Amino acid sequence: MSRRMLIAGNWKMNGQLSDLGYFSNLPEQVSTPDAEIIVCPPFPLLPASIEAAKTSFIVIGAQDCHGASSGAHTGDVSARLLAVLGVQYVIVGHSERRADHGETDAMIRSKAEAAIEAGLIPIICVGETLEQRQAGQAVEVVAAQLAGSVPKTGEYVVAYEPVWAIGTGLVAELEDIAQMHDEIRSRLTRGETTRILYGGSVKPDNCHALMLLDDVDGALVGGASLKAQSFAEIIKNTLG
Ligand code: PEP
Image (cartoon, rainbow, N blue to C red; front, side, top):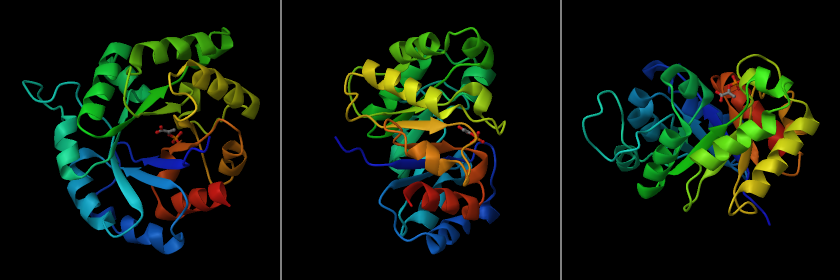
């Protein structure tokens, strides 16, 4: 079963209106890739990013959405509004949101369901902490996150992001990544067709080996997606 490779850049709380030359610089450095390339800027940059990327291969995603379609949720953004803007993907359950905002698996599932309902594809993040891995609980933790946060129907992407590998320069061992992706796939209802990304300090010099693993269908990239040049190198090295 072939699954289309997907490489997503997560800008987190970075980027300015003055940085949107990125959306012409990136395509200048990579010929149209045989993969989906997604960039997820902060909310206020979404409309201008969509406009700037519209003639390129770059698809725009968001970094979060609310589980409700509208209502008294100050500061939150609905999936429906994101879809109307032209956003196509949304990251939900990133470990920084689980940690900083106390997001639970149930909240993440409702966000993923709202995204699907609105016509978006959610990228559902799961991953264990260092303490959990050292205690031999990594698979158990990720399995519980999947059971609690993955919707019953609809298309979604799963991103396996060991928390200790995010923004630290540490990358999980290839063997551990392969094992975890296999565990994740075996637990998904439509495992054969669902894309499973790896995230955690993916860089131009390590992405090729990561993407050769059977069950790795792409990457969720934080820091190295901020500059068009390094994200372009990741795309080229991943597909090359
Ligand atoms: C992320 O933001 O999901 C991420 C994996 O960040 P980094 O690539 O910087 O580790």
